[in-house]
Image 1 (cartoon, rainbow, N blue to C red):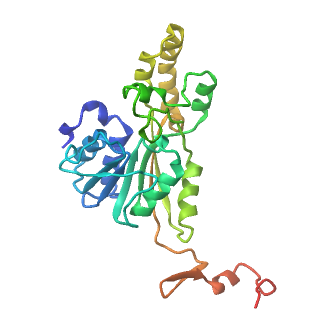
Image 2: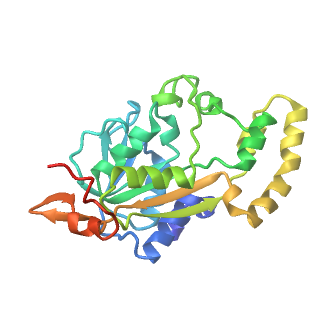
Image 3: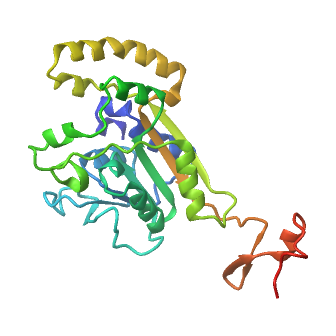
Length: 275
């Protein structure tokens, strides 16, 4: 089904991650998927990877129910999903969390309605990004997205207000997953990296000097990120919920409780417990 997706998309982290995840049996074509902050790119990528049970959602009132056929469409706010807990196998977001007022809440909502986990594609915070911000060649707010939507949409919560570009790190992602599900010892995150050169952004910069500086940095940046992939600006992660309890916990008739016998093996609790 690769012919259904434009060649440039095959080089994008989204397409490659979904394809690789299928090959590694992390996800299956039989799984159910919800896409939040979704659009036509999601449809193209997921169709090209043979995924059939997909619901695409967004809070953009310009979208219609039938334009994502054969997929389902649902009007949803990523920060306040109307679905029940664990009603999809996976929830996907591609470059959408940084358009939310509360990116962490949206990620929490994704994990809440997912049975197996969340698949996320966002910007990564790293040394190159910090350096670029100091030189003012890396944006902090996504003004271009609003420009590209006739100055009416594309910002925070799809308004005309340019959104802050929230960038993630691995330790933060690990912390979110383990904080939400502290009972499991086998929570796991798979990470993916890719460099996406800001060629479109360079074209709309007014200053010729700034365009020249940014263009001249593209080749060195490409080489640097080839040698140090984690310095790339595209960042993907698959957050897989665990199902194995920590040894200090036990299941008492469906209720997870601390296991005193296990705790005693590592701690002297004789003078710490209260009657």
